[in-house]
Length: 146
Image 1 (cartoon, rainbow, N blue to C red):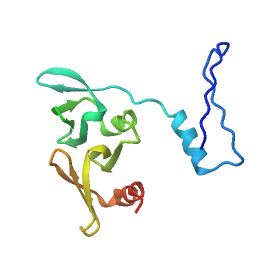
Image 2: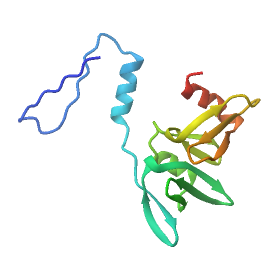
Image 3: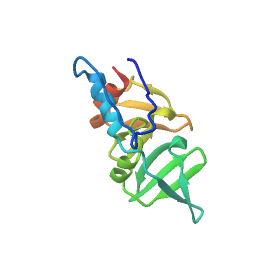
Image 4: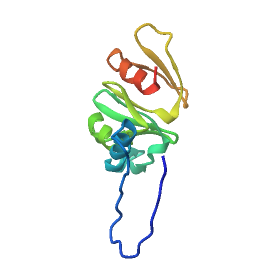
């Protein structure tokens, strides 16, 4: 793929033109990436203080006892949103739901252990070990290309 940028002082708004001989999966992916909204801010509560959380530092987000928590490199935070709402705010290229109660950051995964029958064991950079529920195994395998 070739990328060409033209600087034009009369241009008031950026415009993207894709020249191709046919629509391909690569073109569809480019269009999808360009039309995606940027990730939104997520804030968490720790020690009675509200902090803006950096998505790059998030390891996992999980629900437990009716509450939602985010685990980051700096600790654990209580979130005031539901998992499905957070899923829409997170960067879809980095975060994936692995069960009804958990979302993980793919950039914080050490490895996926496929030796378990019917499920996948996930080891995260902070030492946490979690499991992909059976319902999400095929989705994870597709992401991993297996």
